[in-house]
Image 1 (cartoon, rainbow, N blue to C red):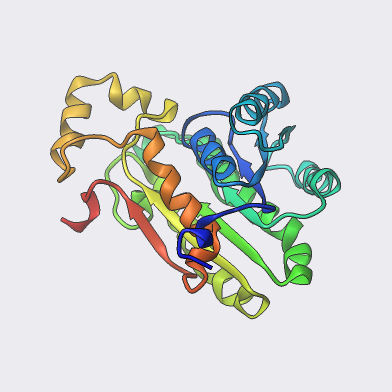
Image 2: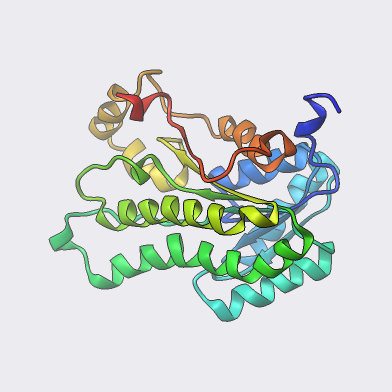
Length: 256
């Protein structure tokens, strides 16, 4: 097998949460382009189905959309079982669904803090739990949890988000140890500033945008399509000896 063959995802099945927009959509597309069949999950089933149809049309790979609130265990388990029924198996999990609520701690409600933890931490935990038995039985899996540069560095007014993304990094490390005997790798990808819908408040604020760019050695925000190569690598057999890693993709922001 050549090195390029090891990046191929032919016959693999991936679940991408929050796959209806932004980085999630780009990651789902990249996985399909590499040969995977993809289940795209969103709170809004119609949006997930529309994106799945577009990616399938473009790549020729089977893609389906599913509606699921990832914070509700009673929805996550049936969704996971439906994906298994539709595709036969699952090889790759990309836990990408996330939200961000910004503000000083004394201006945030407890409900806002909890909402971020539920989406960004509880959701990935529930999906990993739902598919744990299946992945162990098959003796194979690639789990990619989407953290953030705020998993390892931080800034003011981000207590909900930074707390959640620090937890995702530790969840990934813990599961990497727990699942290593079963042939399952677990890694955490930590993006820096990308031009996503979540970051529109920063992109539309000239001073905030300028401040962010000034801290990035490459001098710009990431383009959405720049996430795909790393995701395909971690989802493929090319990354078979990498587990428990936290990998930044941030234009050099966190090395300063």
